[in-house]
Length: 226
View 1 (cartoon, helix red, strand yellow):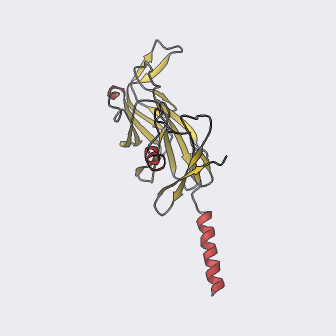
View 2 (view 1 turned 90 degrees about the vertical axis):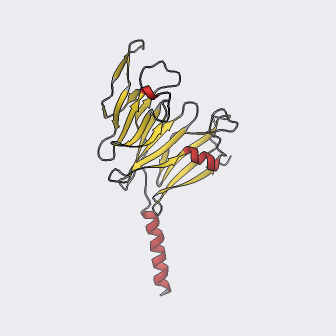
């Protein structure tokens, strides 16, 4: 009987390891917004698989650039494609200028400065999108669809900063943290980080590991040894 329970416990441990969600390498699929102090009349949009926005031809740019004033853009394909609603005229209200989520189901509002859209697939068929912004302060969200247009924001780096870095993640703050773009390794999504005061040296990394019981990410800070 002891051998049976010992074998059962071993199988459970192996099962929990074997069936952990694993992530594929992050891929940048698009960008929306504009760089700080850009003299544009609309948003730069790159990588959209569909965009019905009103174009504006920036004739003074060399080479000539097309920006978009108002509309809807889609990034990626299929039922889990990420949609974006944008309105350049609301640029003075940064909380409403650019919205992300499912089609007609926008759950994340962001400001006007450019944001990279990074896709991370998993071996369980769940697609995650990282909305990453680094001008003047690195800030990212991770969002995804659990099926049936059930979109959710899983991670906000501001909350990580509050819990692990005393809220210091602005470039003007002494010791402010800077999150680099994500990597993946087996069952983790990893964001290396440094400090604004020492930008060339990575201090450590934030490891995000999927917890099947909570259907969310566990967050862990790991400091590199010198």
